[in-house]
Amino acid sequence: MKNLKRMKSMLLLSLAICFLFAGCQQSFLDEPQDETGLVLKKGKKITVDPADLYGDLWVIQRYNTGVPVLYPLPYSVEFQDELKEGFIDVTIPYLTASITTPEGDVIVPEGGGFPKWDDVPLLYDSEGGVYEVVGENVQEIEMGRLNLIRSGPEVLDRRLEEVIKNFGDGTVSEVIRDYCGRLFMVRTDAALAQEIEDKPIDSPLENLAIYKELLTNGFQGRLSFLVDNFKMKGRLDNISDWSQSEKGVEFMTLEEKQLFVANVCAACVGAGSDKTGFLTIDEICYLNEFMGIPGDECFYPVITKTVRTLNKTNKNQETVVKKYIDLSAFMYTRQKFWKTFVTIRTIDDSTDPWTYRDLGTYTIHKILKGNAPELDVLLGTYRYTIDSPVKKKMVGFTNQADDYVQALELVHGNEEFMVWQMPSVDRSASPFSYTAEEESHGNRPPGKGDDEELSTDDSGSGSTGSTGSRGGGRRGRR
Image (cartoon, rainbow, N blue to C red; front, side, top):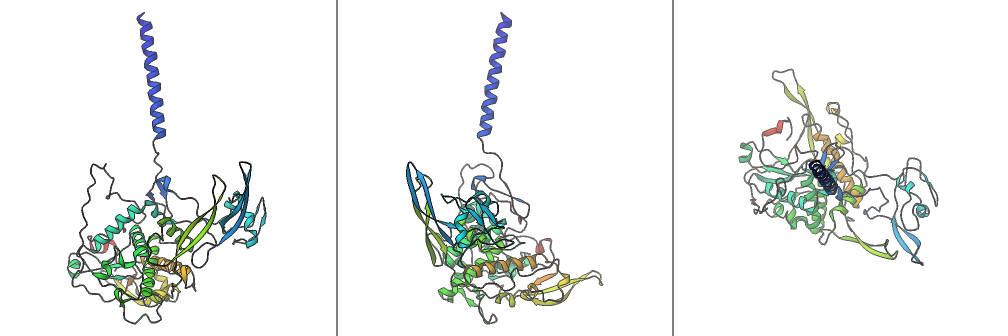
């Protein structure tokens, strides 16, 4: 009898363990898995929520304004014994090769290109979906570090707040633009005495936060202190005579302010993207779309376009309104690079200790055109992506942003052998002080809240903090 009771007890215990294990296993399956490592172009990772990942991004045909070219695709589908017909406005993808779909042959030039207008319907089925063979032969877009926008608007808000705090910590006397157009903090003499270095805004997230704020509000929103307190000056990157005096932003006309803000924003995109490679109009247009630019407020005119879509549930034709920032008045001529000077130098080991020896001073434009005789000193070959860029509208904006990428890669990749010739500045005192309001987080778990950081591929240089040792372990970076 005791053995029988013992057997029953063992059986009940075994069943309990099985149910407990099953419950734990189900609980484990219900828990979100740790798939937060997203590999970017540089090979390092950032922390993102996989649910926030966007779908595949393709190169599509666009006008110079960045607005997609849309084809009016007729559709016809039976739904609940009723024939539904209408039109869908579809984009035209770039194809890497000629293809054959169930609708017919689509021929593009060797090496790839956009299909002919009359061939666009061959890419889509009766409900406006692309055929599988199309998806296998499109040119996908690699967003690289621009993927950081997945971190969400609240992270960008925090990073913009960090930018404001750094400008207002009492160590910044003046704000200028550096060799690749970024906002640059000029330190006071007192700050330099404490070995606090001049510094650009070089964090990708902070540059993207500035980008969004400027396109939304210009210098009239949270960055108004740059004009009101620092009295920021600048030149338009399309003026014919760059040597003329800088103009205070506060004295610019609206049209001049819009051009100047666009010049700064192009630099922000360049600093927010990968330091290698190049930028395309599709990357910037998708970036704007993901960031909600333009939103309810915009510093620029807005292009609105009514797009016909198919309701997948009832198969009815519907319309949505798409908005695009209007940079139709934008003009870019590389004038800044014609008047931005860097000195190329080498190591002179004929002395003890060794020293640097200057080889010559050249414009960034001359170097990127390959016309400086000391280029063999540089660690690599650096050239403009486009020799003669399109200068207007969104295409011109893209070309300026890409030029800034190349200039950044040039100087950043040769910090020891290249020194930017900074203009004369005023280091007397700081005109701006800012103290952020303290926020209460309550009983938040460790590692959550405003102190949570994204690990980016430039984490070593991403902070715009006001303290640190002179030189940061690198020689020649000023």
